[in-house]
Amino acid sequence: MSTHPFRTRILPLALFLGASLAAAGCDAARLDGPTPPVAAAPSAPHYAQFAGGGNDVLLQAFHWNSHRWDWWNIVAAKAPDIQAAGFTMAWLPPASRAADSAGYLPNEWRNLDASMYGTGAQLRSAISALRGRGVRVIGDVVVNHRVGTTNWADFTSPAFASNAQAVTRNDEWGLGTGNYDTGDGYGAARDLDHTYSSVQTEITSWMNWMKGTSAAGFDGWRYDYVKGFSASYVGGYNSATAPYFSVGELWPDIVGDYYASCSNANYHRQKIMDWIDATGARSAAFDFTTKWQLQLAVERTEYWRMGCIPGALGWWPAMSVTFVDNHDTGPSPDGGQNHWPFPGAKVEQGYAYILTHPGTPTVYWPHYFDWGADLRGKIGTLIKIRKQQGVTSTSTISVQAADAYRYAAIVNGNLAMKIGPGSWSPGSGWTLAASGNDWAVWTK
Image (cartoon, rainbow, N blue to C red; front, side, top):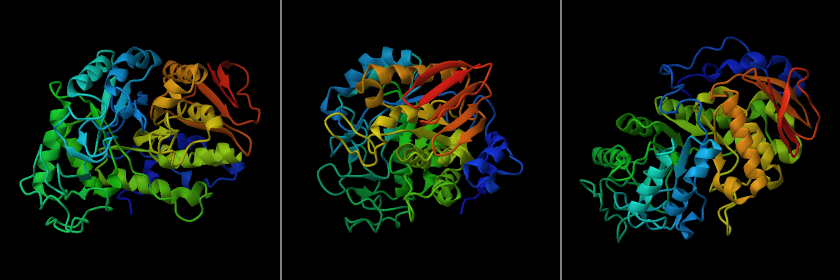
């Protein structure tokens, strides 16, 4: 159960939804009543703690197979293009020495010279190139688990005060002497005991070292596999490292009916709310619920799903990090994970939605750099419109239509958008600013 009922997460967008939701057949009963501000939110310019400045657009600056190329040098070379596109943050893959090529089985946290993406010097050059153009850099930190340097748990660079005590007692290794795991187990590596003071000390020391420009120069964190340990530790690590931006990869299980919608899918986004609450409201989270419902809406021609503003986006947009695909869910050059891909022919609609709506939108590297000039140009145009119209992570939404063939909304009072094959127009006083395959955006 969340420490704060989900009603407290509804921001001003709820004021506009009643009649449209009823027409869309969605559950509006939970979106009525007053809309109090987010509890304990810091003052401007931050809309939520460690969640950026509210006007950010994040680039996932890698894919599953990036390690096959000279990646840090590629990112450095693309820094001018990343800036020109309007991205304010770039998320890089795990930079430490690891037992796997992608970096998600780390062993030597402080060794940046043995990554498959390049050397420490090349990493620093890439980060410097981005930061020199006003793009903050987000590091992918894997702290739920770790592998030994040559064996199960012979941790080095750094070692813990007791390597055995650093491993949970219910880990597969069988020799861990720490406390029981505070989250789900991870069979491919040793589950770290985050209750152990030495684990906490080494993690925060390493992360602060990674923030320093002599090591790397990161501005914030993407936490991998956060269901593997208590969210309270993410809050503690953020308090100790003060990132500009923090986002957790909480991928809730979809239980029961995969085709559930609106109130029947609320359990899914409630898990995201519970996790954010457990961090002490000190980290944003990826909005897997919005991806789920948006993906179903476009592939099944069920745009009514979006009328109730599903996902973390509808309950706490300042902490919602929206995305169409990432290195796990989507395709990568030469293959990749592709576990839960957004329909390729509908990707434009996906970006037309997330780049015009509140939350912090994320663009996947292959979509922008590898899928051709047409999609790249449309994503760039949507980012430009978002910035010109002042759309932020907490902008208001007024749903105008949500039925089988279309979803339409007015965002921030000065941007109108439509996705789906059905026709819709905001009326007089609006100028068509961009359009594509079953989507359009107007401004005034």
